[in-house]
Length: 135
Ligand code: 5GP
Ligand code: ZN
Image 1 (cartoon, rainbow, N blue to C red):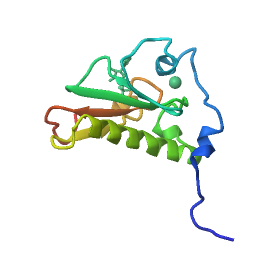
Image 2 (spheres, rainbow, N blue to C red):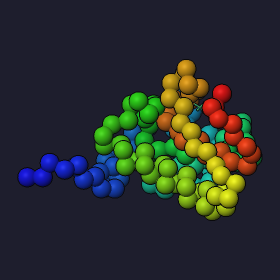
Image 3 (tube, rainbow, N blue to C red):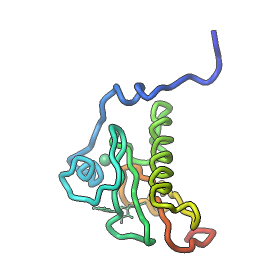
Image 4 (tube, helix red, strand yellow):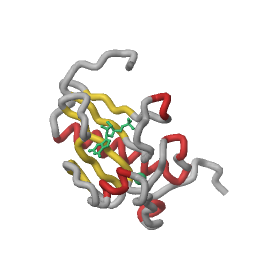
């Protein structure tokens, strides 16, 4: 019996259905198109849209369709899904030719770190210089 890392497949999360929190979560409403947004990308498990208050010339949010409140709530089963968000962000960055100027991906976890919407989301930012350390 192998004791290596357990293998996860797309079907592990594609097949399980997507749980949403449509009553109280603004991003679940956006994913379901009950609230309009400027959609950048969509597939079975993820959704990307323009940030309403962009902090850079490019500011796109990439979210899982599954309602997960923050990174801290991510389970072992969600890890392929979270990896997929980065792949989607990278693909959008490639399509927009952001590679030469650079881009930043940010996930704020918890109010103290600046999280204001409690449905996990990856910020993709580009088009200006970004300082370090972040504010
Ligand atoms: P956080 O502060 O939680 O890391 O990021 C939440 C982001 O969601 C913010 O950048 C904010 O501008 C964006 N946002 C909040 N409400 C809406 C909305 O209704 N539509 C869109 N497109 N973005 C939103
Ligand atoms: Zn949600």
